[in-house]
Image 1 (cartoon, rainbow, N blue to C red):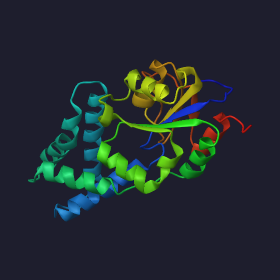
Image 2 (cartoon, rainbow, N blue to C red):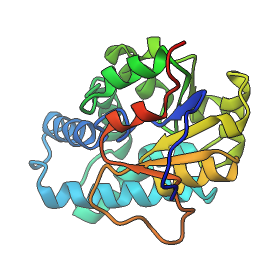
Image 3 (spheres, helix red, strand yellow):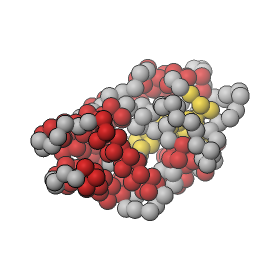
Length: 236
């Protein structure tokens, strides 16, 4: 990790658990879906089971082991099987995504930081999320006005940490990878992908979990989005 910091002409910023409070959104959407389908109440244990299944499937997607489309329904099929509950996983998946798209909870200081960076650098929002869900949440939150480009992996057929998606982001704003800082909460997705694309990386530590040793070391670690301000160029 670098001790000193530099200024960057552009920022590639992740969405979930970097700008959006995805954990809260996911929990609320799952709770509402369970309630409407008259399943048992969403307990802490049930949510933890779902989260474990979901993370495992998304990691498999990042590693290219499964197709993107299989995640949407498979996580709910596995959840219902694990809970020994009868139900239609496809119906649960559709209802969940509908509710999730309405959960545009932003993390503290997201708007003020984006507004500050917007006047000083070029910004790209880069997310592995599902297109219709991310589009709705981004639109509802109003943050699209701060970005020169928004790249959703499902739309272009590339998934983080594939360095090609990071290089595409750089190309779209006409900046060299070395001029960009890649910011995100996922060591295996954001940090690994940015690193392999030749970019400096910044890990937003959204949980108390230790940084995994097997992933490339980030250039910077922050615990508060306001810390990104120091990486922005001064106004001329």
